[in-house]
Length: 416
Ligand code: EPZ
Image 1 (cartoon, rainbow, N blue to C red):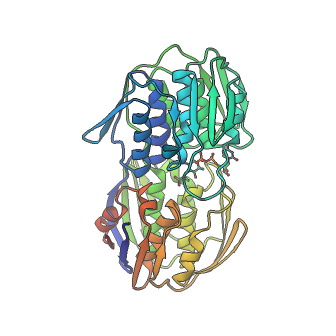
Image 2 (cartoon, rainbow, N blue to C red; image 1 turned 90 degrees about the horizontal axis):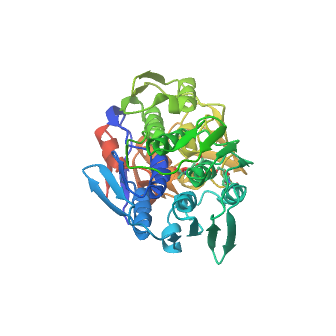
């Protein structure tokens, strides 16, 4: 199992390129099975979650290969609609296969999904939404069986703007005759990317990015060459890292509009942030002020996927901060590891109270999940002394060799 060794204390300076987004790629990969032809995905980042999704597509009979950085998926010979547990337990995004398999084959049999242990991760909204479209669903022996031979267009009202449920219902409706509407849909940018991808294949989806999405069924989808959006969570992670260590970094291929909530918080803490076209520049030249309150909310609120990284920043900021995690019930797992590094944090249910300390000190810690692992990297970068981070396979699910990007920016970090 790989481990990170970090010598803290260096400031971060320089420029880094932001790759295509994990949470845009995963539904797009799932959606590629809807086209019985070829799908080309430009600059398809090789996150481990992406590799698992590619394995699922190959299990279903699709052929995939990389041409340089572009992934080519040929689903013309795909014929299976059964995704076994050995594949689904590794990635939450396996649940996104329901919609595309329904659209391609009229049937789906998918084992319950796995993914980060940040909460119970129910799928009731996915199931309820598909049932509203007359999909017959049975859940037994750990599998979800869908019979969509009589699927109809219709109206789905989501009790919560779930990203995955919104994406699944969109994909289940792409070839269904008539108009399907989703109310209280999630508004994350990754959903707009999925809409653009589906429309580039000949689909008719509109309204993504708002809370009402309309899908008009079409007869067929055609081959497509698509370039997904860049990863706003990787962008945010690097901005927070530089805020923590001090220095000046430039992100290229970054979409600043996707990070307005974070940027406003970082400015509030004393960072200088400027944006121009696809660049975000952050400068942190002195100890930052604590941010009194950070509350995670569905987009465009503060993203839950940057909560652990922001919590780390607050442990060394001047003052007191309260972080409220509204999306996932157990997303404070980083707390125990940061405490080992000298952080002063009190957790109560979904609330963290953080009193800033002068500095953290290096320690041996273990990444509990993807984003808290990223938070621990930030902690190691700004701590006094050496930090060892175990179980970094969690981090590789959503970052492309994070150590190489950080080395480019002047960090002393190595993988062994
Ligand atoms: C997506 O997960 C992302 N993953 C997550 O990123 C992200 O944290 C999350 O959206 C919120 O933005 C991918 O896109 C692959 P949800 P998803 O359905 O779709 C509840 C990362 O680190 N809910 O929007 O699973 C759920 O419990 C990952 O990259 C139900 O109650 O998130 C949670 O409280 C982590 N019933 C809330 O909705 C359901 O059927 C948000 O979940 C579905 C969800």
